[in-house]
Image (tube, one colour):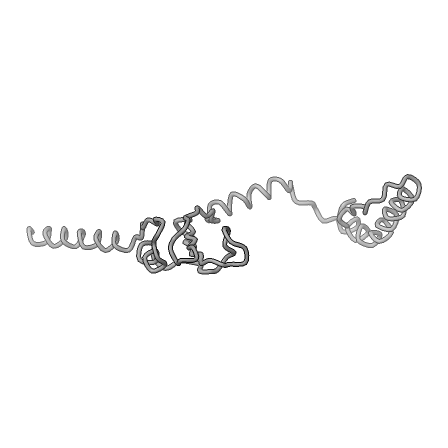
Length: 155
């Protein structure tokens, strides 16, 4: 019984150590090289070159890690110049945004088998009338602006 309990504890400790070793919670500090940042944070999700904010025409290296939401921007000397926080679209945030858009759009419009085809059939006439009225307004008052057309499904 004691051997079984001891081996179970050893197994739990080994599992805990293995789990903690896979978690990368590195830190970035100015002056690090690209290799040092990879050692600290792991492989970046994005590697690219961006325009140097301090010089025109030059480009600098940028590494981005999406999970911790960090971006490392290196200077022309290949040393870490700045660390920025990056906003990532987590699953919860995307779902929240989708829900907000659905609420803002209102209830879905019902399909009317007679009215909807008629709306689309007479849309060119409606658009022509809107443009004709805008042309008259432009000629009479000098207020020349391109008219905003409603979508065809708007009655």
